[in-house]
Image (cartoon, rainbow, N blue to C red; front, top):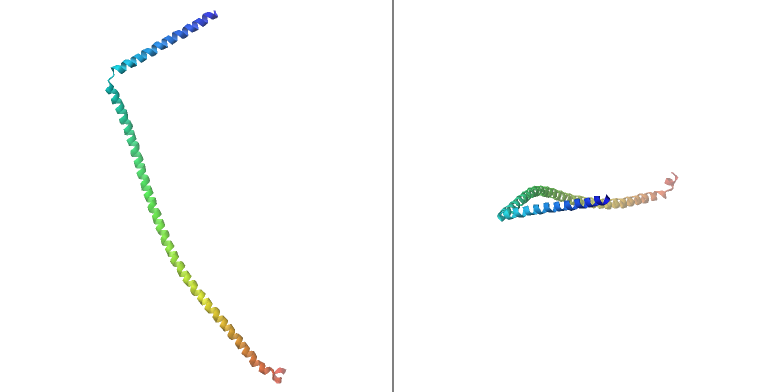
Length: 152
C-alpha cells in the first residue's frame, strides 16, 4: 500500500509540473503575440510619455530647490547686513575707545608731571625747613652760652 501512495505522489507531482509548464508556455505565447501585434511606435510613445513625466518631476523638484535656495539666499543676505552693521558699530566703539584712551593717557602724563613738580616742591620745602631749623638752632645756640638764660 505504501508503494501505491508513493506512485500516486509522483504522478501528482508530474501532473502538476506538466500543467504549470503548459500554463507558462501559453502565457509566454500570448505575450509574444501581443508584442507582435503591437506597433513599435506605441512603445516609443510610452517611453516618451514616461520620459516626459520624469522630466516634469525633475523640473518641479528643481523649482522647489530653487525657491528654497532663494529663501536661503535672502536669509543669508539679511544675516550679512546684520553682521556688517554690527561690525561697523564695533569699529565706531573701538575708535571712540581709542580716542578716550589717548585722552586718558594725556591726563595721566599731566598728572605725572604735576606729581613730579610737587615732589620737587616738597624736596625744596623740606630743604628750606631744614635750613630754617638750622638757623633757628644756631640762633638759640648763642643764647645757651649766656649763664642767666641757662638757669631758667
